[in-house]
Amino acid sequence: MADVLKRIPVREQDAKERATNFEEVCYGYNKEEAMEEAARCLNCKNAKCIEGCPVSINIPGFISQVKEGNIEEAYKVIGESSALPAICGRVCPQESQCECKCIRGIKGDPVSIGKLERFVADYALENDIKPVKAEKTNGHKVAVIGSGPSGLTCAGDLAKLGYEVTVFEALHELGGVLVYGIPEFRLPKHKVVKKEIEKVKELGVKFETNVVIGKSTTIDQLMEEEDFEAVFIGSGAGLPMFMGIPGETANGVFSANEYLTRSNLMKAFDDSYDTPIVAGKKVAVVGGGNVAMDAARTALRLGAEVHIVYRRSEAELPARVEEVHHAKEEGVIFDLLTNPKEILVDDNGWVKGMKVIKMELGEPDASGRRRPVEVPGSEYEIELDTVIMSLGTSPNPLIASTTKGLETNRRKCIVAEEENGQTSKAAVFAGGDAVTGAATVILAMGAGKAGAKGIHELLSK
Ligand SMILES: Cc1cc2nc3c(=O)[nH]c(=O)nc-3n(C[C@H](O)[C@H](O)[C@H](O)COP(=O)(O)OP(=O)(O)OC[C@H]3O[C@@H](n4cnc5c(N)ncnc54)[C@H](O)[C@@H]3O)c2cc1C
Ligand code: SF4
Image 1: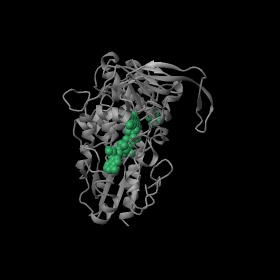
Image 2: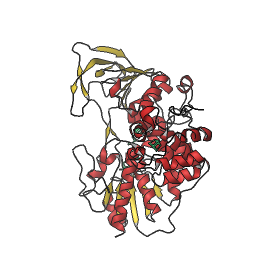
Image 3: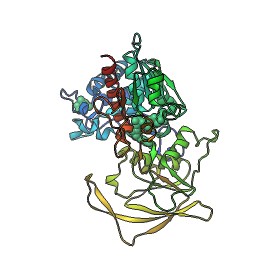
Image 4: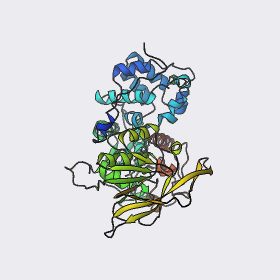
């Protein structure tokens, strides 16, 4: 008899082996393991886990179907609330959402809600279980800008209600951060992302790629000349930030966005594709979030010795616990309480090293985190050939600057109501990272849902 206090472990690729390939790290549960893990759920009446889920999936509802082996039924329960479960099951920070509220977690391990969601969603993809389409369209035309999780969710929800939805995407591939940001070894592109997007297409949503709203056409033109009655902006926060230290424009300095886009979207890690990448022998990634972990683990797989340079301590690392754990297992070195002062450049304009300073934690700042302060006289130099800056991103101002009457805030984020996505401009809605700044997949999906609700309320009057 298994110990009910412990979760059923999930199978993973060996750390040494996976550090040299781009295949998925986590293999996920098989049916037997999923049913055994599902049996640990207490089916709580007042289920706290649901409160922890930003789109309120009926968690005990789907888990009780898994327990009985009814996987298709479980998928239907999840589908009532989430359009991209195979993605969320892989990338959501469950440890700070549903799983941290799970009653089982008080005495032992919480139920592996994320891994169960992933199992159910993968089963649906493998067995081609289709979402339910609207019987007929209602004749209303809606434009969605951006094909990331917020745009896909908004488009899918509206299509189910019968709207004629067109998604406009600037890049040549659909998926936003899911294709250009999060690497293959965490989120497979063909097996998972493409297939989940196929399901949105099957609902009747049209997609136009290589269309940059604000350049190719504008929101005002879409509404005035192409008869779109409402617009949802889900354009994300893809503009990278830099530190402003000397040497930052040297060859060999990348933003994490560029590095990951080359590797993920353009497949630069595979020699049979045209886009090149400077792999680097010794790489420093500056930052401690999910994006930094992804860039570090990518550089490692391209053959480099990789250091994470982060100015706070391990406890403050903003990345998911699982990602930090995986990065360490694979051999990423953590230079904590360390901050760059200058990038050292050789006579040919290439990075040759970085001057850094040691930090210590002082008093808590406005966010409640202890503020890192420099230790006087503790500067030293490290030798490097590549630096990847992963300090966060902000929304691109292009859409706001080309749309009449669209209000933004100090951080360049579009101002929109949380419950329905309404912006300062009539019939224009927004959500996801474009509104909040860089956040999470599930919050972007929640905002896409809210936007669809707002648009439906407006157009069904
Ligand atoms: C490397 C990386 C790792 C991450 N890891 C995680 C994780 O593990 N878990 C998690 O929950 N979150 C993670 N995130 C955050 C998460 O991916 C984002 O919060 C989420 O994708 C935001 O969704 P979105 O729909 O708002 O925007 P995006 O996913 O950014 O999509 C916006 C889309 O709009 C398009 N677009 C932009 N401007 C225009 C325009 N003018 N015209 C037409 N199209 C336009 C873009 O090309 C893009 O496709 C990660 C982010 C990155 C970068
Ligand atoms: S809180 Fe945990 S045990 Fe209770 S219903 Fe949710 S997953 Fe099951």
